[in-house]
Image 1 (cartoon, rainbow, N blue to C red):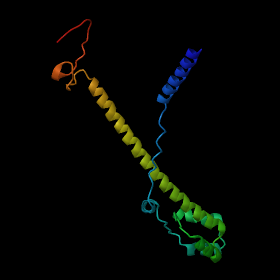
Image 2: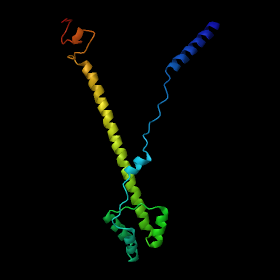
Image 3: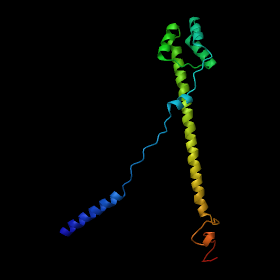
Image 4: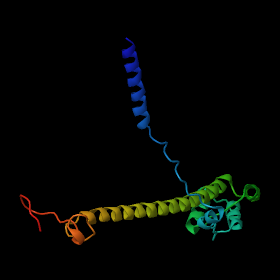
Length: 172
């Protein structure tokens, strides 16, 4: 009986040792490439306005609707970067909330598009680099399998190993 217990204990220890040998390492954390504030400022398109805010106030006072003012802003391709206090002061001067909301949303959308374009550009460059590395690796692998590759091989001396096409043994 003691032999079976010791054999069972030995098997359990060996099984645990084998399982410990199969353990894998924890995955490496993902490296995130951060954008510095200076790079972000260079990426974001500057706010440009061909239709001034004073002209928008005059359009509002003339009785134009929000949709007409927003269409005029779209046609002029103007963008405005307003702080919350500036939004409040322009609302007090006569620009409606709907127009001010559109201005803020259009500016935020332009900034998001600029950042997305930069991310897409970086991702495309990363994919191209990975493709180039894979192509180089495959080329090196195939080059070593080339029958006419004259690398310093063990078989065949300085001419490398050359497979032979046919049946039986042949020596060159």
